[in-house]
Image (cartoon, rainbow over all chains, first blue to last red; front, side, top):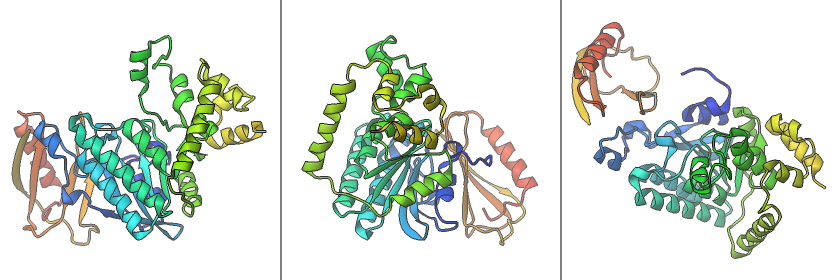
Amino acid sequence: MTGTSLFHEQTARQRIAAVTDAGSFVELLPPPERLTSPYLAQLGIPVSFDDGIVIGKARIGGKKIYIAAQVGQFVGGAVGEIHGAKLTGLFKAASRDRVPCAVIIESGGVRLHEGSAGEIAITETMRAIFECRAKKVPTIAVIASDIGAYGGIGILSTCCDFRVMTEHGRLGISGPIVIEKWMGKKAYDSSNRALVWKTSGGKTKYLLGDADALVHDDAGAVREAIGKLLAKSSPVTLKNAKARQAVLAKRLKRFGKTENPDDVWKGMGVRDIAGASIASGPEFVALAKAGRK
Amino acid sequence: MEKFTKAFPSKPLKSTAGKPWALAGVVGSGNLEVLVERGSRPSDAMDCHIETSIPGYKASWLAALADFAHHYPAGGT
């Protein structure tokens, strides 16, 4: 393993170690427990000792936290029954113990090999997140890797109280190749990385309010951002769900026919498009704030 | 899936080594995931369990592991 301080290049366990207090992390259901996927085994596909997710308890700035990190290198971080059960159990423990819970996301969504089992697992996790929020236990999604948060995990990320992103992270449901396949290359060229990141990347998500923080691609910056969000949480109610729908309806009305993501940026108050395009996360935040009336 | 188990003679892993287990790598196309555990095993042998989706390379695996056990103290794992 190479030593790297770039958050998006680190492994799941390196990320957890880097964002939590030194030596505070205790892994739950670790690899020696061998909780591996029975479905992959049936299909003759090699299993991973932790089924692609590391979960455990730790401290950040001395405060207790439950924390998980998905392993994107294992079947794209996709969620199977065991992976999903570990995540559900973690949020249930967080709800039971009234301890905040953060997940470092790196997943394309449901693991297709496991079909319904993966779907059900993700919905059970979402329910556990809502249980946390009903008790005002903070739930945080960190989306800071190139794989991003897609499919059912994209949805799950928006169920959390907060999302911390970096410019590397992407948040969506259908991936770029799927969008191109259904809508055509003229409508969405998935090989145009700038387009992909300008429509689903951290900068745009922060600008539109889908991400609550946009930080440097650095574990220290992610840690600091999580630390600031450990004391706040709000329940999911019919009232705030309807309010959110109203915000999205307004957004659709305003930008629904916009074909160029730069026009969305301009519409949201970013004046220096070229500068904003190459800016780092925090620099972009400053540019975005400068443009807001 | 091809699965096999074999123990190789190896000098004992020093008992001062910290953790009870260590994980390296992530299983995937061309990638290897290795879990090493210390336990109540004879300290002069490295006990291996291999699972691979590519059959036919058993001899290569056994040779590589025998070589590792010979050069590194892994007894008791």
